[in-house]
Length: 384
Image 1 (tube, rainbow, N blue to C red):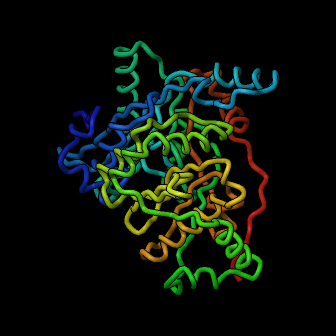
Image 2: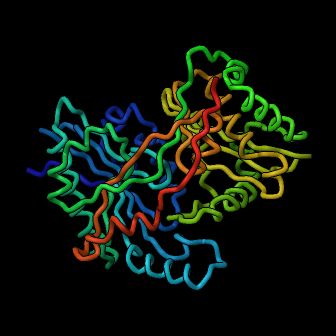
Image 3: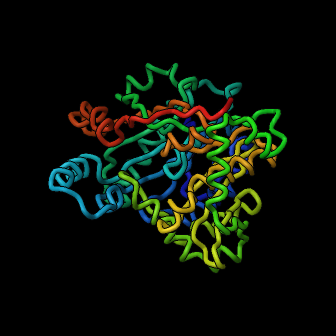
């Protein structure tokens, strides 16, 4: 008997889906609806339900990602050597990739199962069979071959690492990725003043200096109509930051933030930074139980350094988390050094990946080291 079912839209999901995904907003139908309605052009979604005697006991979110050079590498001016390197990578990894997880957000937000009802190995076997069926469907419907499959973003203590036989059997490699920067909110931080007072003198002075440099820039929470009216500016500010990344896999559409607000309501917050009524920066938050998840942001490069916009955003994220009684603030990956300077700690993460071409699969692990090289950075220790 078939133990899984594949769905192609949130509105096809079984009624028990949200009951199983109650712990993680990124697996719930409100978020999946918002994501479907505002996906990057090169991503579409599949959902897997794993059943035991007609009872839903496991779920998985799968993204089909079409990787192309223009999406992966967006900075136009490059040397001949870099262009050759980019073209080589593009030839190997371009095309259709299946991601078990969420490429638009850091963390393990792709799988969940009831450990009292199904074992890890039985669950993974069902998911892999479903992935094979999705591969066949894509080949039949789109005439495209899946080039690679990945299970995305696991902490080192995740129980999935005990399933060595599964990953060995299907020829997946375990690849290190950039750490997730996370700050635990201390119990004695009743206000942002308590947070600042826990800094040593150097970082307390840095906080005060950054706040002074705002020079009249006001952070204001933006509501649904604000997001609609400022959608073009928000997208341009987002692109200012996104286009400076060395490697990307997607571009968010202009309606992304508005759609999240419509569907997630108060669980999605957007704060804009205004100077003389002009929007010059913003950051977004997703309220995920007791975890405050920082999401995408953007800013005008002209004001970034003189006004220390990015650093002030990190402080404001911490302020929101403390004042609203969150246990952790998930700052996600990238910019590890400056995030550590506000109190976030690096949590190592890995993913499992395979290329469907056997020869290329043997070199894929090394390729990922080139694509996401280990960054040398100095971890800061701001607290007394």
